[in-house]
Image 1 (cartoon, rainbow, N blue to C red):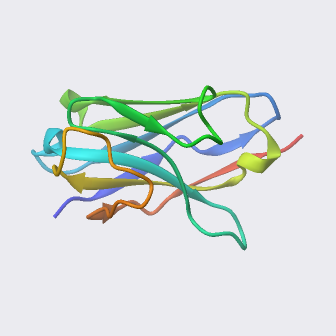
Image 2 (image 1 turned 90 degrees about the horizontal axis):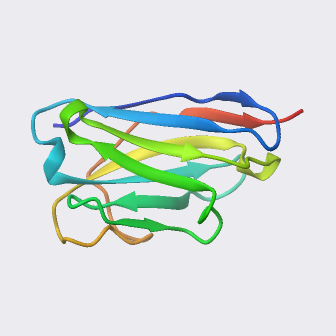
Length: 125
C-alpha cells in the first residue's frame, strides 16, 4: 500500500508560478512511475504529465513548455513546477503512482495504482 500526499497548492495571480509536491509513503518509491492530473469543476480529469522510473518524462500539449515534472527518489517525492499560470489552470491537482510496467513514462490513458487526495490550485487576480 502506498499513500500519496500532495502539497503546494494555493492562490496565485495569472502569470505566476507554483511548485506542487507529492510525497509517497513506503520504501519502493523508485519502482513507481508517477503522474500528475487535474480536474476542474464540471470537467473530466485531465492528464498533465508523467515521469518514468528512469526519469523520462511526458507532457500533455496543454502544459508542455510551462510545467516541469521531476522526482527525488531519496525523498520519495515528485514535483510539478508550474509557470505562466492562467485562470484555465484552476483545478484540483492529483498525483498518482503506477508500479513499474515500462521504462517509458505512462501515457494519458494508462492506469494508476494509487492516487492522492488532491491539492487545490486557483489562478485569479
